[in-house]
Image (cartoon, rainbow, N blue to C red; front, side, top):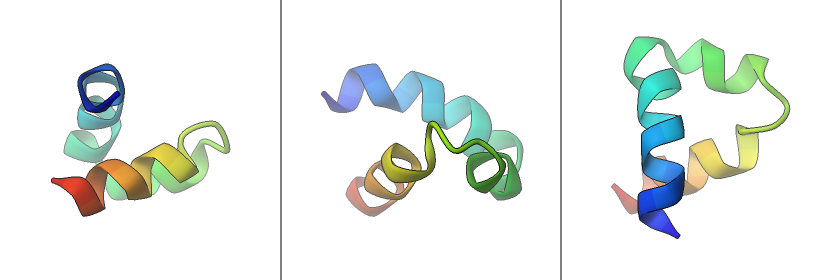
Length: 37
């Protein structure tokens, strides 16, 4: 679970936190990954 979401979120989160909020597909996962990390 974490491994699958990490790569996709790492790219968005790494570049800019705004990207995560911009995409309505990763908002939920984005927060989950951030909290877990």
